[in-house]
Image (cartoon, rainbow, N blue to C red):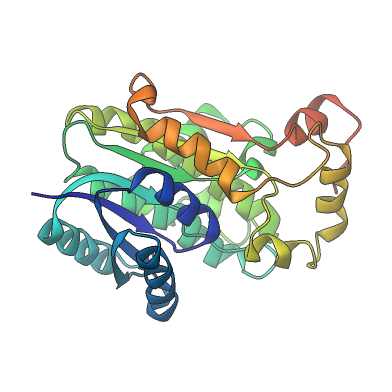
Length: 275
C-alpha cells in the first residue's frame, strides 16, 4: 500500500509542514471548508504532490472517524499533521474548547488507532499554552487523560469558570500539548510517535486577523521585544516539523516544542507585560 500523510486543517503552517514530509507519498488534505481544501490540493498538485481533498469537522467524532476510514482506503497512514484551530479574537470560549481541545483529543484518539509502525504525528499547538500559570496536578491529569467525549464536561472548562476567549485559548492549547504527551504512550504501542509544536506569532491569514483584533497591541509588543525581533514564517515551522516527523526525530515523542522567537522567555523573565 502507498504511504499516506493526513493533513487536518489546510492553513499555511499545515501546508508548510506537509510540503516538507509528503514528497513521493499520497496526501489526504482535510478542512472544514471543502472548497479551501480543494484549492490547496490543486496548488500542491501543481507542485508535484499527490493530494486528495476532503471535508472534516473536528468537533464531530463521526466526521473524524469518517476521515480515518477514508484515509485507510487510500493507503497506510504513516503521518498525521493536525493544524486545525480557531482564533481567540474571533471565537467564543465554548467554540475554542470544542475545536482546539476536544477536536485535538478526538483526532489523536481516532488516528492513534490506525497509525502504521514507524509513523509519526504532529499537532500544531501555540505559545499561548506556555503562558498559563501552573495548573493543579488534578487539572493537569484531567486535561491530559479524560476521554475526549467527556472533556467538555470538566468543571474547570465551564462558562462560569472561563469567560475570556484568550484564557480559553491558553487552556485549550495547554490541554492539546498535554494530550500529545499522554497519547504518546498509547501511540508507542503501535510503534508510532506523536509530538507538538507551539509556534509564536507566525505570519498567516489567521495571525493577520489577530494583529488587527482586540489583542493586537499585546501581539505587536511581543514582536518588538522578542529575541528574533520579528514574526516567524510557516516555512520555519515546516523545518522543525520535518525534523520531528522524519528519521532524525526518531528518538522524540510526547514532546512539545516552543517556537516563538523568545516571547515566552520575555513574558516570564523579562519585561514583557501582557494584559
